Structures are given as structure tokens and as C-alpha cells.
Length: 341
Image (cartoon, rainbow, N blue to C red; front, side):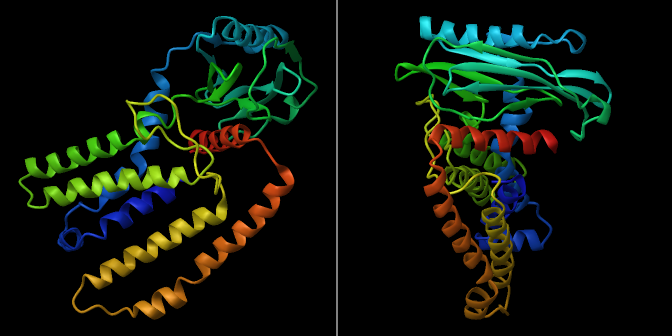
């Protein structure tokens, strides 16, 4: 789900508590805790977790001496090493900054069908990822053979250009090497533990402020985080719900992709309607007719969602894309959204 979807869902969670609605009308920021909780898991990942990761294989190319073949050889050798030792390795690809607003782009691809690591130099782009026209030319390419079997994963080129580059966990699993994109994402931050921790902190903050709604504040914080996690579970890649007891991200329900427009439209629209409805029903007296409100005004949202799922089912039957490839695709899209923000 998009960030705005998680945020507005968290706020909607808070409006289910009558005392929180009344406190918000009186000027309290208690409903804001829901929005913060809705954004918290991804914020922890993209603003903190990715910066403390320690890579075992660091790709740090120089823009004036870009050696595509050397990089491809280094990536392939790292994957072969995991196959030989069965020990996890973290591969990190640094970006190439040319100036305050210019970056040298390059791309890498793990060709699981042919067992190859591919690398190619791209154009010079600005921070908005708009290429410099004169840099669009035939660029050096590298291709290196991988000598161990790979699990099917994201099949397209992963672009490395602005800010911080991507990382991959190379792990031996089921007699093959799995290439796990951004392994630091959806781990501890997307767990029951984080929901409990954030809820406890929210409650403690309101208790310290001598606010009578400290229990409600704790519940809003915890449920907002859980709402984010549950929304993510609808996708192809789940979360590490039982961290720290488990180390592996679960498989999601495979219903939507993180960037799908209609499901995000449904969540944002439904959450906004829930906020308005809850604010009204906890006022005195309520003015909205529930039957007209949900039976009429809300109707376009589920109809759009049904249309989406019908089209998706037909497309999935034709494409038959491997699950791991769809999971990694979700991560690529989600990461790109945060990097572009």
C-alpha cells in the first residue's frame, strides 16, 4: 500500500474510539497517533534500518571508470560463494553521484533462467530521475555466469541511481540460492512486537502528560501499526509478524500489489468515509443516514474493487508469474516510491 493509504487508515482507526473523537474535537492530538502509527513501520525501515545494514559484498563503482564486466563477475562470484558455503551474504550496490542534482545510473539483473548476472550502464539522471538527453547512448554491459541454481526472483533490471542504492540478501534455501531484495524491509518494524511497543509508548506519553485517555492512546497506536501490517499482508510479500521469534518474512495473501491504484483508492476512500461517519455518529445528534451513506455513497468503492479483482484474476491466469518474482516486484515498486518521495 502507498504511504497515504497507511496514514489515513491509521487516522480512521483512531476515530473508532468515542473518547478519542471527543478529545480531538476539544483540541487533543490523539488521533494523530493513528496516522503516525500507520506510517511508522515503513518509516523505521526506510529512514533507519537500511542505513545500519552491514554489507558483505559492496559494489561501489566510479562513474569515470565504470567496469560493467568486473561488477557482473563480482556479483556472480558472491552468489557462487553462498552456494559453496551455504552462508548468507549481503550484497549492497552504491549509487554514483556526479553533483548536487546529477547521478550516473546503472542497472543489474539476476537472470534466474539462464543463470547469469547482468550489469549495464545507464544515462545520467537528475534527482527526479529525468535523463540527460546527451547521455542516452549505447552503454557498456557485463555478463557473468552463475554456477549454482537460483530460486526464481524479480526478473527485470533493478535500477541504481539516486540517493542510497539497493541491497540484496543472498541465502541458501531449498538447495538453491535465493536473492532477497532489501532484506531489512518488513522485519521487526512489521510485527506484533512493534505494535505492542508503539502502543505502550503512546500510552506512556499520555500517562506522563497526565492525560486521562492514556489507555485509549495506547490502543490507537497499537491498532494503527497492526492495520499497516495487515494491509501489507494483502500483497505478495507479507511481514515478519512473530519477530524476534522468527527471522523470515511470511508470504502474503497475494491479492494485490503495493502500487495497484484501485486498491489504494479503495482504502483511502473507505478510510475517509469511516472518519466522517465516526465523527458524525459520536456527535450529538448524528446527522448521517447509515443506509444512504454506506448503501449509496460508498458503493462506487467496492464496485471498483470487484472490477479490479476480475481483471487481475484473468491477467494472473495468463501470466503465471512465479511467486518470488511477484514478491520482489512489490518490493521494487515500494522502494522506488519511497526513494522518489
